[in-house]
Image (cartoon, rainbow, N blue to C red; front, side):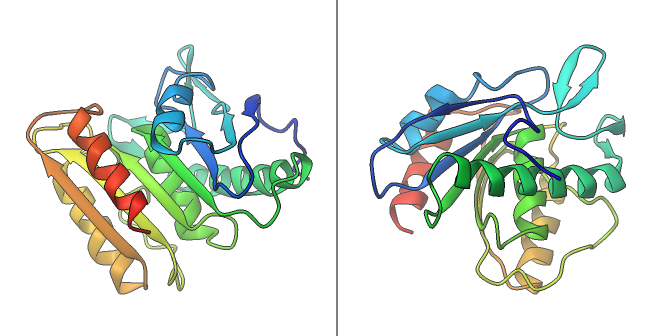
Length: 206
């Protein structure tokens, strides 16, 4: 059973009526890494920022991988379930019930955010994914994901998150009912000012 202590995390109070910013860091980072980004993208929002529980050679991750870009899909699915359980408990614990949740993730965190939304849309239905990709490899564990909204920002020369994987996420997500918006820019793995501007515009148009 999930508890508010299931994940090491930080919580920052926000203003009434704002959505909850769920921040999911990239490989090797921690619960503090994306807090400034969350405040910039969702000003005034309460921030819930957990730490991934998988340790890969001393680096925090959200799920195990078998190689670069090769995910342990069973673990992706299990960790997404655990994260959804934690978010549900934490939202209640911090008095945020009924407020929309926006997950903002980078790289490994973007993949976890997308997986959680596509498997647990009742908990999380809005994702901003920076340098992310399709999290389920060759599998398709999704059901009806109508109502789920995903914004993806990727570099066109990113070997860690190939554009073909993002295109697969878009096509399969739409096939299952999700609304997927992709922004592709020149460059590689990371978050640029243009990524932030596009994400902010997308969030503002929701």
